[in-house]
Length: 207
Ligand code: MN
Figure 1 (cartoon, protein in one colour):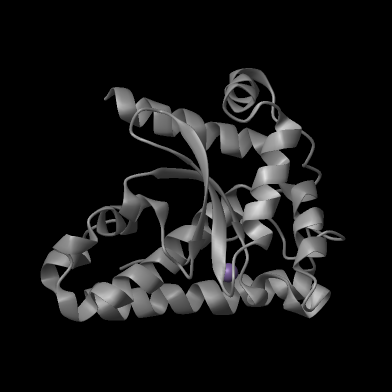
Figure 2 (cartoon, helix red, strand yellow):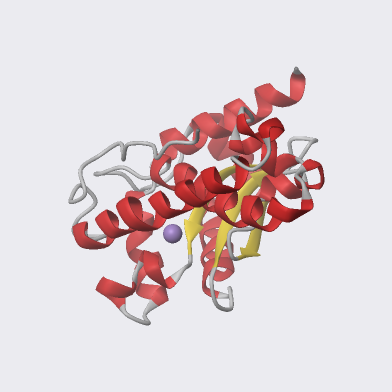
């Protein structure tokens, strides 16, 4: 059974940037529903029951057709949100450091250029979706904008950071003002956690 991970900080920990009420509904209602519906889908096929969600998403073609869309949407929702909670923390923001920052400079030119491109990707999503920082099978970093709960794992990438552009992520506090939400969100990005995801992705490649 897939389980809702505990939020690694209090609902109000990301105030004043992200509000407590939104975080509570987002985690306890939206994410919880993705987990419940993913469980409903995998219960129908014993072969799927013990597979981690990442494994299911990496090979959607192997998922029986009658539950494939449910696994893609709800499994994607579960994995997307688990990553999202992990790359935020109170009193963070700023810029990445060390080897990860150098890799970012090498890829995007500068942190400022990365931030601008990632912000544009988030703002450019029509309707619901996510912006992603991913690593490909050669270790190359790039930014993706994907609709709905489509996960980069299903396209052969390893996600290391994401920003939720669904209205449920910001509507209570920011209403239709997605640019203000994204601007506020940069203040809670935990670069240490993103760096950890990057290192894990790179380790996965050399295995
Ligand atoms: Mn969400």
